[in-house]
Length: 259
Image (cartoon, rainbow, N blue to C red):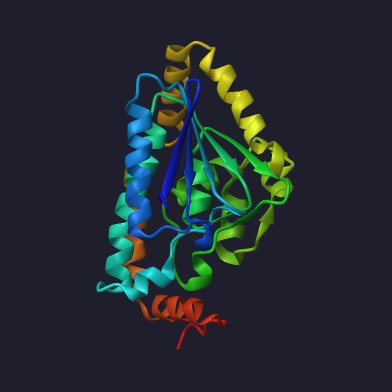
């Protein structure tokens, strides 16, 4: 089974994370495949817009922590490598001249939350759930979360999500400005394609310039933020709290921090 599916509809590339058995959570294989497919779509002269979605019942549940602890590297080393590839995809989405749409079906947590926030337009299933997820495991957000979420929802709401790590539903995500629209799950791709077709028939150069201007003015420090997040993740995942949080996640128990 392919890790990432690509389907061309007219001038729109639909990229689907395809590991539904793990809620499309990222391991290195999936992260590298996603970057490769995304890069090819962005580079194609036949593509004017891109839709990112997930197979099954999730957009993306974040990083595959179980895979991280099973490998030969330590969790902190594995996270450092994985986040480097994830950051390449985030940078591609923001640098791309082509508008990128997130079709959010189900849970968007951790890195999945970050990827959704990096997209230019976002439509979510009415029952979709968003969860920051990192700090509950003694970790820190990555994938640009610490720059995207404050810019979209404001400082206070970003801190609420970072410190309390509550699950927020699609309606609240819409109210907070994290997404553009909610709809029944079966309508997600219809709405995404409606947006994509409008983009495809519009002034591509003007769209690329306005995307560049908005992103440059809003996320001027993105690359620095991504690297700062990666370095912080390496550090906290090697800290006793991070080690405890990862162990508790794998063992499906409540972590005991501060020992």
